[in-house]
Amino acid sequence: MIRPLWGNLFHTFGTGCPTDDFRGKLFHRCTLVRVTDPRAERSRAAALAAARELLAEQGWAAVTHVAVAGRSGVGRTTLYRHWPDSSALLRDAITLEISTFHRPPTGVLRDDLIRELDGIREMFSDPMTDRGLRAIFERAAVDPEFARLRDALFLQGSSVIRAILDAARARGELPSDLDEDLAVAQLGGPVLFRQLASDRPLTADQVTRLVDGFLAAYT
Image (tube, rainbow, N blue to C red; front, side, top):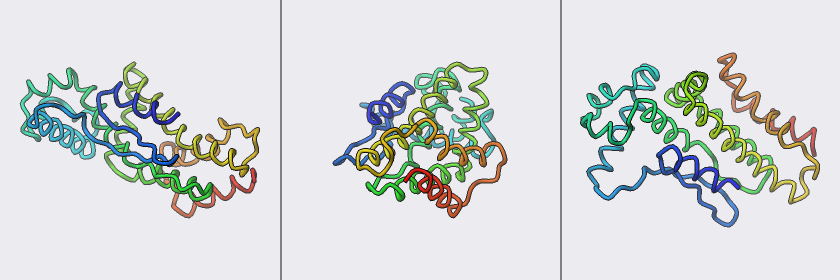
C-alpha cells in the first residue's frame, strides 16, 4: 500500500522519491528526478538546495525565482522551465526534504512505533522542514495545490504507521478489530499538536512513554 502512495506523491509533485520494499521492510530513499543532461541535473539540485536554505533562513515568502537564481547561480529561464511558479519550486524543496525522516521497520512493534514517531519528532526539529510544513499548512487554505500536497503528505505519513499496525495485527500482537483511524490519531496526534499548536516538542522520552501507553491499552 505504501509503495504506490509514496511513489505517486513524488511523481505527482515533481520529485522522484521512491519507496523500496526489501523482504517486507520499507525504507525510503530520495533522489532527484533523473534527467538526460547532467548539467540539468546539477542545476536542479543546486536550485532545490538554494530553495531549502532560503526557506530555513527566511520563510516560504523568500523562495522566489529571483532569490533562488541569485543564490544558486542557476539562470531564471532554467528555473521557470522546471518550476513555472514559486509554489512549484517551494513544493519540490519541501517534499524532497521531508522524505528523509522515515525509519526502516524492524518487525518489532514497540521499536517500530518509537522509531517512526521519533522520525516525525526529529523532522520538526529541522528548521527547514518545520518551516516547510508550516508553509504547507498555511498556504493550503488559499492554494489548492498545497491543499493537495498537505492531504497527500498526511495520507503517506499515516500509511507508514498503519503498515506497522497492520503487520502487528497479522502477528497477533494487536486486536484484529483495532480502530486504525483512532490508533493513528492517538500515536501521531500528540507529536503534531505539541509541535504545531504549542511549539513545545515532545522529547524522545515522552515519545517512548506515548508508545508504551498506547501498547498498554491495546496489548
